[in-house]
Image (cartoon, rainbow, N blue to C red):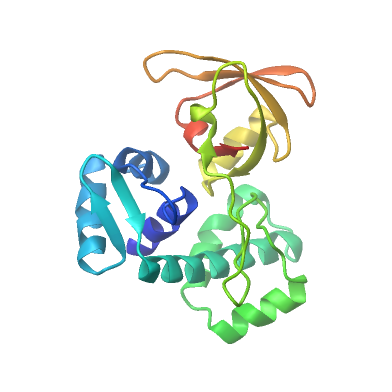
Amino acid sequence: MKEDYLKIIFELGGKQKKVSNKQIAISLNIAAGSVTEMVNKMAAEGLAEHTPYAGISLTSKGIRLAEDLVRKHRIWEDFLVEKLGYELPDVHDEAEVLEHVTSPKLVNALDDMLGHPTHCPHGGVIPDRFGHYHEDSHTVLNDAKDGSVVTVDRFIDNHDLLTYLGDLKLDIGDQLKIEKHDPFEGPVTVRNLTDDAELIVSYKAAHYIFVK
């Protein structure tokens, strides 16, 4: 769906930089050919700008639409976790349905009740009703250099990923020392300095974890 593309390009930093088709394909778990087709459609509708071999970024029209979708989606996620006791991996699909039937009045009422959260349960920023928010980190774990120390900032909203990270015991705020990247799209080995545990993070998951 076009909305999923808008949200993922926004999440990957497409407001300020070019996001590659490969990044979008990995994040949405779809074939690269499908991405190219949708990207061309979005460009034709004035929602995005596509530069061959460089990637895609959102236009001001695309950004406004993405911010509105992200706000509704993440406020529902916050509500489901805070008020209804949902487990984090289970909120995305519910929020996906609810965001499409939510009026501005309803989302503002939810926002008031929740005390104006600035981030959703997996660390993603929530734009306020005036469109204001602080930019998240857009650096994925896979791009962090060997030997560097980074802090886990947020996760892409994906059920399988959140379940996997729960098994790994990796949380927002954990400090990681990057030990090595295995070649040929192999995993990333990190040391979690929070509890001094060595973790092996799959190549795909390392594109879903944002660090700063």
